[in-house]
Length: 275
Image 1 (cartoon, rainbow, N blue to C red):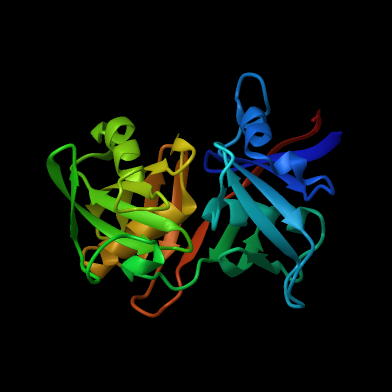
Image 2: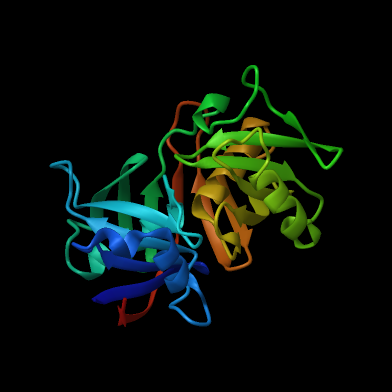
């Protein structure tokens, strides 16, 4: 079976985008893992599968699969790339488009190579992640290998734990990231952000993504870090997020308001693969 795809990235967070196949065997975890391999496959952080719209006010319904083959709920940079691809195909109206996803409708605005997406209202209820806690709090204490860490926890349509660190560059992402991802208090696993606050309008961030490992950037992770910092009174409404793959912008006025994620997207190449 031959599958056409588009390889894209948003500040280094890379994706393979393809239209939903009639043969669902392509979406089997083992087959997706083979495609995700950067030496013998195509290579990607997430695969984005575009299907027919399920709501009259949307252009497409998309599904997200991590490099380990597991399906997940949301992907901020992925949504931005899908919006850019639809714009490239001439399927937007006045630079705007609405996308449907497992986490709900995402509205996007496209201007040149910058794409903004409405990531919805952040949910701090631990049950929304889910996260085992008696009640909502900030921070939570989490014990990992006998050592206590303070984390913020929020759902951006997918689960995030955020640790504040003195320096993102030297944060123990490779060791602490997977330990928290698989912590028993997160029964569906969790994305782990390592947040360095540079100033009231600027942060540095590294993210260990559930099912993908450390990625060069993470859109929902940027949103999670920004809203955790703003909720604590440490950040302004507009924040520049420096990641290893480039810079994103997060806008959040405060509780009850929607989070907007903005940044560049790029089409790397188009191709096909025999599956």
